[in-house]
Length: 426
Image (cartoon, rainbow, N blue to C red; front, side):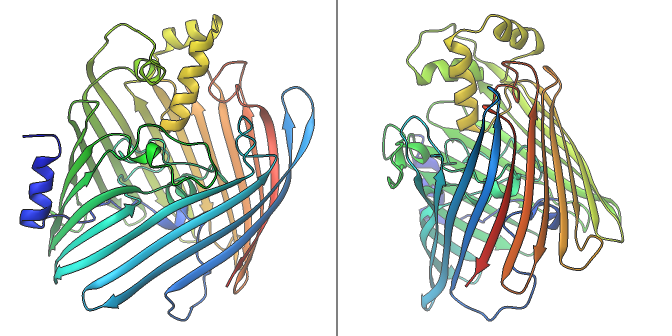
């Protein structure tokens, strides 16, 4: 039986599946740059906003350059016949300087979702088209978010929630079935193209559908505090990967979570070399990836998340130090590939996130996050202040990359940057 036949039988024959995407511990804490206006809105099939940004970058060579961006984000979700629904989500980002300096592309269009949904029964659905599937309960790093690799075309914020929302969906057939205490999902995503495209308006199927893949996920609620999820993921290029998500209430103010994925695979360095057709030593082994943490929420709307991240496929401390101290083109290939795969470059990182809703005055939200690489001691810091009116938002954002040359965050072209962002909903 082929890699696709088992899940395809489950989807088409049994109509099993559910959108078993595990919710994150505190969605309000993550909704930094992509939250809807916090006033009641009339029901509408269409949602549209325009966003403009103006700022400045401090580069490592000492220069300062301006950065500007204009974005349009469109969403459509409507029933057009009994049991049938159409979903479209598209985003256009135009940036100066260009998002991709190699191709000089200023405008990047991202098809986030475009699919049809059929409700075969009250608790059974089939979806076909381009779907942005997001799995995982962790905040800063999601080992079970299997469909994220190469899905990000234009990064407008380092906020993890923005990175998940503003990425390409994969073309797939997804079946869904729910019951009172749980759900099951089955997904088949076929290979449609060989390589990703740098063209700004290319649908870029080579990024999201470059190989056959399938996923089965089961979620079963045990009680009000525990709702685990189990996943089985099989890409054509790797052995099957197992996944597990669990979040639960420690007390009324604290949520604990753990997210794990494991299976045999080459190291991420070997995978990066494979992408370039470079011969390398076979280093297949069972590798674990893990993210675990706590989110604490106070009575005055402050949420604090602290997370530890482990990536068993990345470079360990000694290997990463050796690679940095003797830089070769392989270092660039490795770093660029992990940026596309949205994976940490070393084994261990920590992540801290703070969100304060209605800080000091109503409608003012303050946010901050820190990624800290424990191997090379480089760091990414990001802060935002955002004020909300009925249909308008104004934000001031600042971020800084610290670290020595060739570290994870010290290798970026920018030292720091700031932006003023204005968003208008229609």
